[in-house]
Length: 412
Image (cartoon, one colour):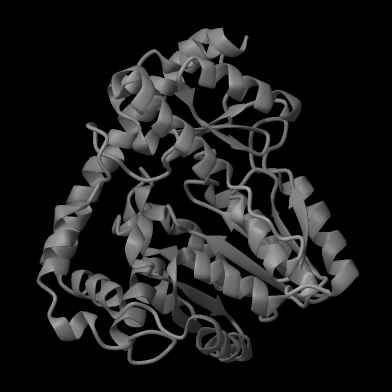
């Protein structure tokens, strides 16, 4: 029979990211760092290749008291000051326009996504995710014994494919009387696409239309929202569409301190959720209280205190925003270099607007072959569904100059 449960016997994580990261590291040792183009790292880095650690954040963390870090959190759903500041930061100018708002702390944005999958759908039901997206959505679905349906992210005009999204959501609603869908926006991982306000209105109209047949739950993964070139208020403008949400529906925002503060190792994030029906908020909170206690028990107090201390102090918050804005400008500069050259040489990419990544368009059967070709020339990107990801977040301007042309020559 074996020691494993049946549901765990066939589970095996093949992480393409860390596999390629190791290849790049080995190449640097063998050939020298200056001779390797490493565009694997999905974390924000400085121009000299070091992980970005915001001074405005690290200074605050170093000055936290022992009792801000060592004790357990006030509650397994998180400290009150953290939940208050997270709701305020995530919802921005719309915080007081929503009638019912809930919040809970999770171990990173990942914990928010996973707990939503677990508590919204029953085993055997289907979650709707983009066909190009974060691979962990599928892993989490399998972990919770869910099926996966994908919607085509882009249509023939390289815009959000509302037609396919509608078809898939409608089919799922008819089959199971409920839809849980993931939309990673703004600053989509891995394409850097961001939807327009009118596209978001179409999403909400569809959610409301389908609510006549059941509940529509939208998980809006906003991990990269704070790197939008549009600024704080404009990046949240789409949220105004949720004011008219059907009472049968629920929207959950998955928030990540890893990205917002560049403190990846603290593992702090959370869910902020809204509905025009208080019962939806209460039920989701109650279920997640049980999940918090039953799976991770507690969120690191130091990370929560760090976030709430910065967000509640205008001087500290302004310092962070100013420092982060300088990196948003750097991301703009990096993306412009790569995209302009890609256009010049005819290297196809998915529509990029803002964010950490640019993804090359590619037929699925050619991805592994092209990766091998690139690796032979000491270029190390990441395989994703329907393409190859270039992490401009972790790449210097110097390394990005000429890269599109090199790639085009190698894979042609």
